[in-house]
Length: 487
Image (cartoon, rainbow, N blue to C red; front, side):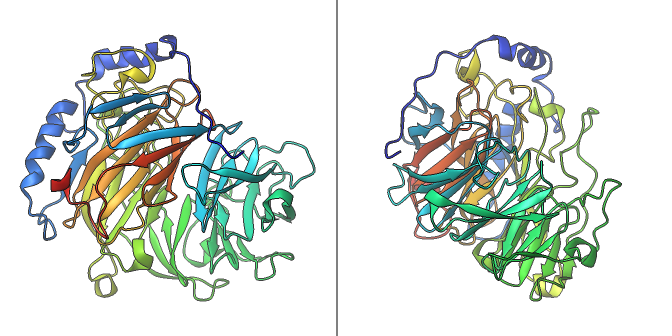
């Protein structure tokens, strides 16, 4: 397809929000800090007096109610795609059948994984008008449907090969993707994992939860090594043989950071024999006081993490995923918070210093509307989180290409849609904008967002499978943080 379809959706039903509205009515005043979401926002604005040209001397905490004022108007834009701040423009929606779970940009191609309909390759030479080059079911092209379930969130691709797990077969499919119209795969029994991660440009691949090591130096003949990288760096499997490592990120060739508690920095100079460089301190117990469950992964950095600029950046960021339906403040911060750390002196100290955080909160309903996506308040926060779609949860995030010791971050947050954040030079995280998709079901279930140019991002929705094309229209730095005085 060469055109981006524009889809008009019927008004969302009130029925699917009844339970959440009941929770809001009785509990919207609760939060971990003892005040309402509005009081949290006021306190966060008060912290703005911290000098912006140096690292903050105290820990900085902001929320999704603490949005920076924008000069554009109207303050909230309603489009066929959902609701957004005035600096994010919805351009269209590319419908993908099934449940989309992740995407990745490599060169001028964008790769999308879907639980039920397989793997997609798009030409994004014209970012606002992606063209489908090919797709393949996870059976490798034989024509039957193989559901991947929860794997392949962060596609392991390099433009020539993709490594995708297949739950039904308990294997990995190594796909030759050089010709997107004719993709063929080689099955690797026992190679499945929750997230596959490429090392050395996919010459090696680590599996997260299973600890697998795959030698792909000859991708036509992949080799699964008998040893587990997880065992060699000190992780212990549970009774089911699963390691508590949701994902990994390759900082640069030879260095990897795990999303786990504790997070570990690993030397992978010899990928077949990794070793730990150092570990961050374990997270404190979850911060909930209301008895609700903690995040889906242990600790504050259990889902995914990133050290920009191949580990040369001052900042390291990480988060865990929540399974938080209803009112955000019922749950601990962990699972609905992006954490930022200062890496200065890590070579001597073997650790990073906690510096700031940004936390999702429940909306205050100040738009005066009700029903479906219309419950999104003026700062982009739903006043009732849709049950059954993970709810109030942080998820995959992507720094802007100009990120350098601060800058723009686009983050997927399920019911809170996309959050556009500005990491300032002192580490403070400010909300610069939002886009809350209405998906195909009338609510957002945003699992991933990726920059495909300096202004265009692709927003991936799990519930509908759709890929929304969104443009950022605000000020852009050459590098580093956005100058907020230009807003």
